[in-house]
Image (cartoon, rainbow, N blue to C red; front, side, top):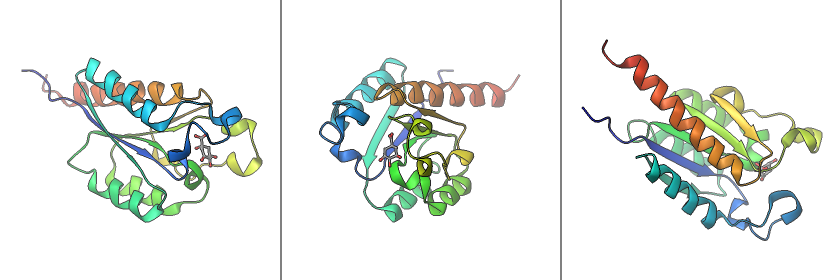
Length: 157
Ligand code: DQA
């Protein structure tokens, strides 16, 4: 039997809609639309699908995570500044218990100390930080591998 396509919800947090012009020395010049297009392309090449959403609003991101249950197999997320502040996003990830991968364009640990702490990472399978747009593509790979591993573990012997 062919396995159902893996469905990944990609969430981009606040200010990531400005990628391309926002602090290019830190975040690069790739736009969010370009990142999303490449995620779609890479997912399709693996027989998977992605749905990409950007929001500047914490509550909207919480709702999107809640609604992901049953509709997606994994979440790939750059919570942006909410990484460092949002207990609500952390609780939503914990509540839905979907495998999640946290990504950041910049290397959080090479920046201001307030960026060294992620409230959300502990509720993710892992975190990828510092590879620019490539962080998302490595993150997609990690999310797909995680779901494939879970499916293998759940498959009847
Ligand atoms: C970011 C890092 C965060 O500290 C920052 O607030 C962002 C982007 C990154 O992708 O490097 O908005 O998540």
